[in-house]
Amino acid sequence: MSASPAPTTSPISAPAPAARPDLPQVIQGGMGMGVSSWRLASAVARTGQLGVVSGTGLDLMLARRLQDGDADGSMQRALAAFPVPGAAARILKKYFRTGGRPAGTPYRPIPKLTLKQSAHAQELTIAGNFVEVWLAKEGHGGVIGINFLEKIQMATPASAYGAMLAGVDYVLMGAGLPRDIPHLLDELALHRPVVLPVDVHGAPAGAHGVTLDPAAFIPSGLPPLKRPVFLAIISAHVLAAYLARDEQIRPDGFVVEGPTAGGHNAPPRAKGAVDEHGHAVFGPRDLADLAKVAECGLPFWVAGGAGTPEGLRQAQTTGAVGVQVGTLFALSQESGLTPELRDDALAGIHAGTLAVDSNARASPTGFPFKVARMAGTLADPDVAAQRFRVCDLGFLGTPFVRADGVVGYRCPSEPVAVHLRKGGTLEDTVGRACLCNALTANVGIGQTRPDGLVELPMITLGDDLGGPRQLADLYPAGWSAADAIEWLVTPAVALA
Image (cartoon, rainbow, N blue to C red; front, side, top):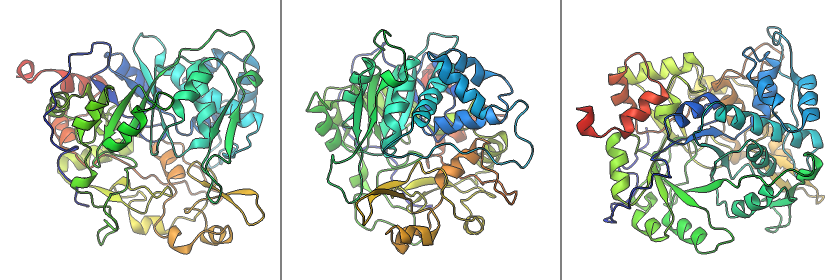
């Protein structure tokens, strides 16, 4: 396992702010595709804290859940509330299968992300995000957020609009510098056409973008939508200062993420900080100065290694409103992880054998990615070597300018010969995993291949497992999201 510093952030002496009863102390992390499910977010929101759904691949999630028969009717119930009945009917006709897919049948594909998107592609993305948020908000008055990756720029306009149609309260975004999101949310709240700049390798900044015109999908005359609170997920105080200085790009607050957080991490600031096992090594330079974040004057939460009652109190003494916590909720009963994977992870925690690596090569994004060492998953190099390379989802692909000037799309996790033919390098393909397909397998909707093999999972957790170990001692048979919240926010004296 790679070495990581114990503290999430550098020590400071900023005074604790006055209590903010209008803001949550605990933000549930927006973990990998489907892990932060609508059920988990709903359970957290019902406790008075911020429940968050993952906004990655919700078009795919909707299509595959429908193809699996939508046994509890939740997808159909949410689609019945979608403000465009014709669109809901088209999606049901295309993807819903009564009783689910026959055994061994592959899922029907959905459109891959491109700069120029078909009406069906955008309609499915809008609906997928609407469904997830609508279900998370159903039946209670709590607050719900959605977590996006800045890296997946081409999906952001349609995804954000769908979530806003369902009344999402917060939008959180990391894995990049989300300077264009505040304006995007302002415009979408008024149903205005938007163009979000997209980074295209080999093209000048701002040369390309993805367009969404809400009028092409939604009936005219709808009142303005609620503009959600926007929290930028950052890893350095300099990024907080940069975003806060200009009202055009200023978020409403920050989540300050340390290198022990799960999922994607910002690369180490020291060049070549990778050990002999290919794991990123973080040091003091990778810790944000919370005093300087506090000077920006915006509310912030601390993430990474803060998922304990002591972590929450420590964060608040530095000036933070509270903490964002992922691993405790990823292992809770309401998370989207398959029961088998969750049970295996909990068994490893009870036995003291579960470990998490900061894999510097697994993600095609180039960002380090936290990978839990679990048997039978792609964390095992021998298992990963047996997988036939295929890139049929493409959420983490990169647009690039081809030799003929046309924009193409490539991914370091695609077949090596294909990547080289597209102008990629051999070095960039080494050690890459297909996170898109692995993350679907984590939640039980992995693709079935023509040879009958099903895609295998790869679990991401934070590498500070102290909180889960303490909670596992309290709840040996497992815990609910409400159990985790009560443990985090209840004062130590009351617990005693």
